[in-house]
Length: 225
Image (cartoon, one colour):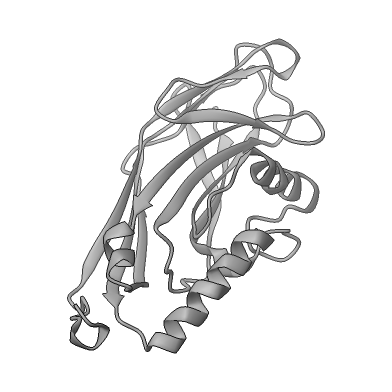
């Protein structure tokens, strides 16, 4: 079908990515294991291990029609609680974000290095990742609370980040990473509940030159990421 006859999707759509729950278990000398569901570990340059999860959102049907995905609304649903069994009371942080480009282990190492050394989450000041690539993100800090039930944690602070930039990529990539604020002891555990990433928006048909320039910009950002 000629481009001039193509009908863009203008009705609202919602993209979803589902992250399962897991339990992170620390062992001797900082060893770390996680329980399935696309949960893995990444090690910072300093040798600290972090549990992380990676998921994808398929946009190939839009790309085949030369359409651009535009995010107009974003949400992360998590109707459950973190719990922690720690020998010593501690705080920990969690980031969840949707990226326009995939992050291999070397890029994920940069993410945790920035977080560890600069307290910088992806795309924010002090981060080595390009802000345009981070469509949606959330940072939170938690603390164990001995005044509540055993294993309880409370949220101390949370903040959103991300550019909401339009995307012409074939996939979007969702991530969850947890960072303990100290070296945890052997047999310490943190339960990480499941969540659903939601991106509301529409696939639109851009002017041909604008679309070509977006594809070019997307390629450049992948190299920079």
